[in-house]
Image: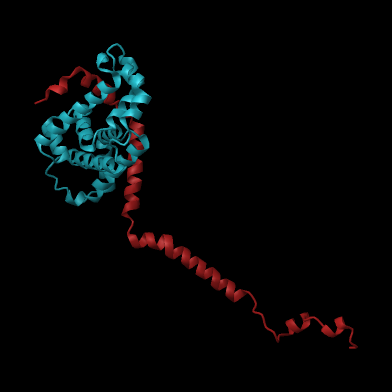
Length: 99
Length: 178
């Protein structure tokens, strides 16, 4: 059951322009589309905690381990240590005071 | 069909992708937006497989998801009367008049973008009903089922969409041309 405007010549011209018959689906284009959909399906199937672990926990753990390694390998600064004494500026020599 | 393996779902996508992509392309016009929308339709279908009882055709079910998704996007985009008629008239009147003249069907195709701007001025429900009718050739009953509305609503939407298009086309092109 159509209304009278359905057959109006101008409506028919507009419809023919706006909605031309769809071209046959290109198989390669369809396959590429299927691949995109399935990639999103696969990503959507990953549990939330796995995504969180991969995006947040793993990088945070890497930073923490790096910080720990840095802390235990870099020598600490010791005011009374022999290295510090040897490196200390001899103020008497600079001031010209007799040794 | 509560569960399905990926290969079987990929086959379903392959079978129904052309129709869904064509609907999204005709409704949304932007190629990138239409492709993303079509992908989202099948993603929604995958997530909702548990709700698909298998009593109806899978293609019909996916098509309904596509219709609803396109409708949501059109509503969100607010593709209604955002441009003033005067601005549209000033920019496109001559081109629209030539495009709509009986002597220039080829010209109409060249100025398709101009005519498509008329479509953008319909409200989403009218635009989608018209798309389903003209692009897919659905009957009024089929459109009602796809849009989950009454038959009377479909008739009203189509009648209003056609009347609005005619009014706009005649306003822009001049009554003497049509």
